[in-house]
Length: 235
Image (cartoon, rainbow, N blue to C red; front, side, top):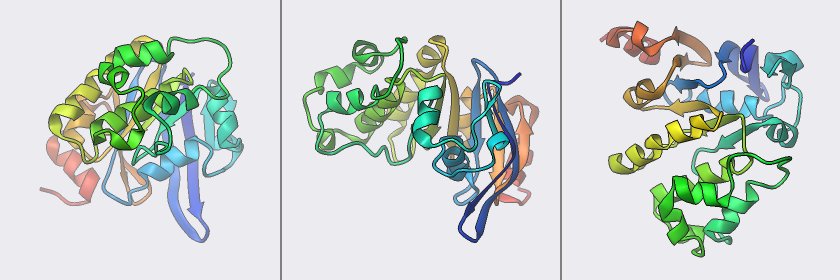
């Protein structure tokens, strides 16, 4: 049994249908990468999993239980946390206060606490009393990841965590993934950067116009196959 599955998942924004029968699976301990152009349905896929877009109960299954109908707060408590696109920190709070928000509603103990986040991202400890708005984009992204980890999730969903960041900062953030996975957290990464996604993924899904155009191990596909799945054209 997979840890997280979507089964014929559909999603709508009023009369507009954004996802069409999406089937995915995430195994325990794996990293799943979702790629695709703007508007392909990647963020909608994450919004559906986190309960921000409600759906049919069995369209999303987590640890063998249907969760497609549950509200976002309940899904978070069950062990799924989102690092949203754009980070969405609380501007009036300090770094440490933003991190502490992530532990709200957490039940039980786990691997991640304030000390653990500072060990993962040491520069946040140096800035713990600063307002989040004074940080660089990369540091804000570290806070957003740390905030999500504070709930000690079994699944961490990351929406475009490298968007707009310098290559050296992207490297630092992605180098944290093995330590995150070592605590027992499985990861779903939504990326427009194909090469970055393929470096870390155990399984790859490419979205095109709300449908899956490619699925499998990254090593199984040629550059031309991925380009066609991504853009719908041959190189």
